[in-house]
Image (cartoon, rainbow, N blue to C red; front, side, top):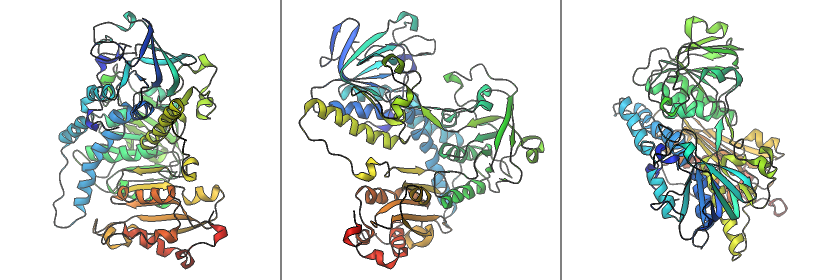
Length: 567
């Protein structure tokens, strides 16, 4: 997809009418309408996020095939407005500020909360998806507004999305009740790209808690913020909310942050959060939670990013001795001593705050897509037990819930649909590490950043690999040490002892995100470490860490594995 990322927003008023959004309100000439009620295309995609856009584009580009994308909210999806783009728009200036604070000769920049939030708004196109719709139509895709559900084999019925406009009216003034359902039929395939939705544990459901949408769309900065969870969203949100001025306390059910990362990386992230004043409580399991009052607009879009009501009180078990108070300071409005629970009752497991963010994971959004009409269940989708005409991709598929992975899979599936229709090329299977899901990269944009790909040491051992591990301090090369005068972190690789190929890599340190792609290439290309030694890093750059890591491996790994052990 080549659209400008700043034009990925959405007009709520335009989202009510379930008809193609073109200047004439009619399908393009390449799509056929057998009757006034049915739009027939080759491919129907449910979900207009980056994944849906990519699968539709790749399915039809350079062909005479047609595709329709059905979207009930904003074209561009969760990533464009509520996840990847706004969070990184908030975090990048904070990363620059943190780097400046650790480089003598530069005065640490001040945080301007108003300007920081304005930058966020620019990067989400002020929540207007006009540019994204224009891109889709320019790519030959038919955009259909409304909530689409399966209504039979090869068939989708689109109804007006709930709350389509500020007053429930569509672009032409029609209300949801005035607009008849639109039936679409796919000659070749229907693709589920419906994304995911947050999981809210029972103790918090009646509180109208913040979700990730509120955190990225923050308008009112709560004085005290509880964050439930210790994963990527929780850690990143703790970073920017602390900088915006909140006293932040993280309630983590497990024993460490980022449980799927290497333990060494997790510890560096915890240290970094505590240094800016975030309090981290591990082993915390909520027993009950209450809120004085819930705001009337808490469930509406107008309430996103605003405090959802009165004071929140949470009682958790297992917190004795597991919390560490932050010792640093953050940005505008931050208070000394870090985030604090209310009433001095932390030793008893009682926490009080002005708002609570629940970041305990997400699940594929499959409950409202009409699977039952074709005899399927969500488990069939995530288990890959689908008929030939139905595909799933992105978060909806149950695969790694990462935008870049979903877009990759969308390109593959889109090309599969195209190739099956045209029968002009022989399909090329992906390399084994990709097919087995062992080449998925991820970056956590905390301070320090954590960038990883492939298997961790424990995951590799659990999968039955005999492994050799190399680990060095992140500041262990001249290039990485120059990034900050007091840089710290860790770099680690996991190598298959039989084939001597890379299985995984993790980097935790400043700008670690820019180092990890080399590891992705090495894993996908199944390049032996003796060959990697000949890829010379420039001096002095952080990529020199690769040389340090390879030198830490046993000396015999500098030569090719015996012939019988290479496969």
